[in-house]
Length: 337
Image 1: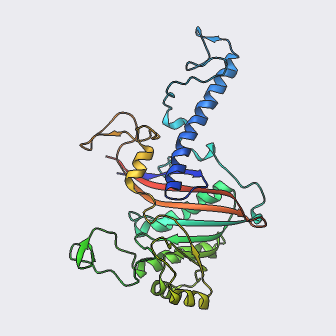
Image 2 (image 1 turned 90 degrees about the horizontal axis):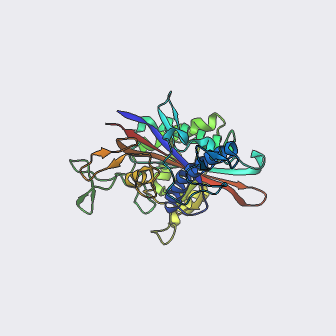
């Protein structure tokens, strides 16, 4: 059985994917601390420093000073929220740490980058895209964003643009040998995903759209089939010394802006998500403990967790060039036993 996606968010100023994992961890643990503080404040307000059942304060605290002992484990429903209609867990509850923009939406340039992860199926991409955008809109309290950049799995800027060679087992052939590396997106799947973005522009939810890691051939093919053309091609030069002259010349000729970034290609591995949500030290305690043999025990949700997508958003105050708000949402499927 497959559960709905688990979603976590946090704002940060660091670099991904360290930026992503650090921010998610900070937000998960920070939300729990906020709930504990609120519970303590309520109890302290009721007791007013007087004894409750023979002891001062709550959980070993006195006169409003919290105990330094290990925090008490919270009930999952006290800091998360489950939407029974979609069977989605919001971890943490989005209302606990919302950070809307301080000025009017028109004062900002808002860029959103959506990472499709390898486990996300083609048929789920439309829903994933609208869900990711809706979360950003809800967080920032805006009705539209200026730019949405789409990042596809297994496409990196240093890859060539040719269709990959695949052996009889479906493995990519690299230098004559089979490799377990993910196979880059076919143009058919890329165009299908691009139609989703075009529909968002038609609806007025996104003003401009772009792609990431496209070499010359992929970009030319997209431009030839796109009804609404990309305005940006975001590339990572970490493994490449310079931008090919042919790509520079072509993008100038068609009005596509080349931007650089340092986001990781494998931005959220499955093991990282389990570590963030698991019961080990530093984990959120959402998932049950897993033994070496794969069995699970103790409190928490059980099953395999598979990351589906990550969305990154940045809000820049246009007249000052200042990043006011920056953060992430991440989604995963929980396949219950």
